[in-house]
Length: 453
Image (cartoon, rainbow, N blue to C red; front, side, top):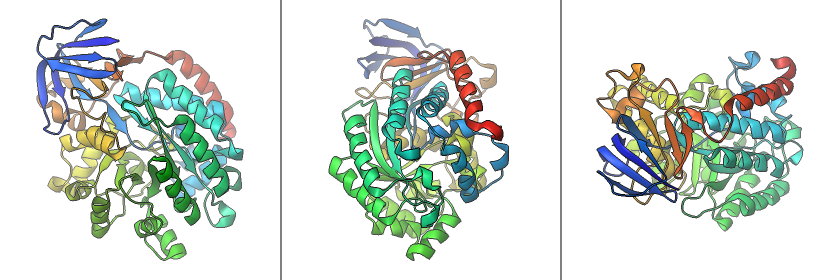
């Protein structure tokens, strides 16, 4: 399909030279940006008048747990920190089935898209009774129906409570089972081609739920098949104490000893890195997914993202799990990231535009993708548009590069475009009946949570 965005008021490209276009057309064909210019003489199946629209690159979410969408705002865990929070919720998550994963993924990704997100990485690591392929398949089908660009993971846990880990026996597997499933998942779901709509990473959950051998074997397997690696790291002081006590090393040194560092690796959170560790991340090319709202809710701490950026660490933005964030909104994440950095680090913190680039080109780099993350000729046509004629944006649009982080957006975007296809129009998902999805999903939540509601 050919799509022409006619006379876009302002395009914030987030390219390497931070180009901002005014009053231009964007011509999209076969999923790519074919041209950007004034009064383009081209044919298109659809033309959208964008005279009053602001256009931004699609937001790229680098860490999520979509299955947690159905365990949000549970009263009994609202005030818990990470370790006790996890122990309490594993009692819920051990009952996951393919329908929960399908519906929770669809709800979470629909919310992401309605707020300008075009690519979602999901860290799924809970496979009750070894139910691997059916859960991944459910997530794959959910993303395909919505039209979002998906980056899946075959997460894993093999340390249960009897082994000194946190999860119950029912949600862990043996290393051999995990590696076998991982090969099958890579072969079935990973597409490394330009413009890929579905990729897959291997992702042991955390140092307190995955063994030394699992990390080593996952790293070896990932490199054999050419896929990336992901895990939680340096999220809490409890985790730091755990690796010091069990392995005699800080978390990052432990990962280095396992070969779980490098250009093909990124960590979620990265709150408690010291100066030398931040330099090591930069030198090794290891990335970090910044999850400010989750970090705040679980009282985990404030990541030193501005310092990471200054050292040259690859950093992206992420919403983290719905149950530790209670939402799937990258626009909200951006504003919180900016304000938290200002509060904590003052003028040494992130600028508003820094945060936009974290969520777009920065996140794309973390995921190892050079085909998304900015609005440039030849790149994938992933973007969103906002009509600036909103009461809540009066006086707010003089600096479009900063607006989403300083002022924010309090309602859905007008259009989201993924791979050249309109997936959100007038603030509503195009490929799913939102009212019907709400009814079906809400009914499933009631049966899933039972007495916890």
